[in-house]
Image 1 (cartoon, rainbow, N blue to C red):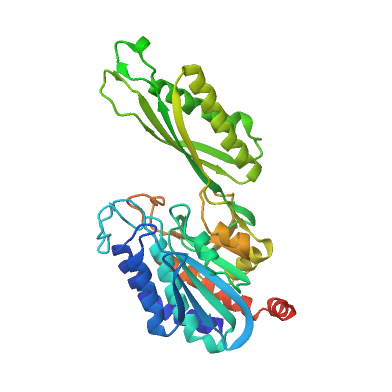
Image 2 (image 1 turned 90 degrees about the vertical axis):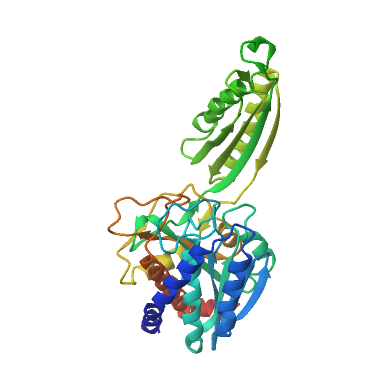
Length: 401
């Protein structure tokens, strides 16, 4: 069965590339992926696969029912793009100004569409069911995973697998981690409200830039002095805006930042410490402020048994040259919500071309990836799916239920 799966995937690889390039040319932002969702739905409808549309928003759920009874495996791929203007000179570059697939979601979607097509063709050999979750809005909180789950995308699912094409790791590499893999991601916004005036008369003003600058420095002390060094945490200020003439003391300054953690206790401590420090500095400077802390995605925590199952599977795919456990990644993913509901595993599929000396990182205007990685991802996910459904232990677990 696996040999047949691989042969079919290899034959369909050109179609996978064509789909990816079409989607790359027609990106849509999070929560606005209407045409992409229609494209995905039409693909499955033409095959005769059962689908649900508008799941939790723009999500699509396709279900392939095997001829034999068994467990239900879910696979997930996201399909939203980013508000970035593409700077690549490619024949399939984005046709939408200011929007591009700069994270590989076009590749995720193409991979799963073709894998779904192949599994549908092999449905008479399948034990159990395969649920294909095409998720909208991964890039922008509150994300698409949570509303899709609330709308029933995981109903009846026993296990879920997912991967992210990782353009900074060599093609042929599978990277994973048992347990905490990707961090929780929160963000905050802060506006300092001082009193502006002439730059030659600072004593008559309340300098919002000076106060905001103090906060940039003071907030860094939270991680360095308030968090146990054993616990991973990041606090970064990503935006500092106060646009004025050269001789004007600004009345307002706006900061935006992000917090990345793994432990809930650390997450809560940092949120509380940020506000306490803001209160103290603004009180000492006699200025007002507006502050909002937005809780984002929880951490991605892989289940040990399911992650090891994927690892063992990947090692038996010939195109996979390296399977390595890596340090936790401080980036975030709303795949975390699926793993809070059902057991499963999420991993990286290396997508850096061997001849490439420098790989532009994700979310870069020149981002791209080695399309051969899509075939590797499809083989690992497809093999894991088929073998999980026919695994004696998992079959017995389903019967016992």
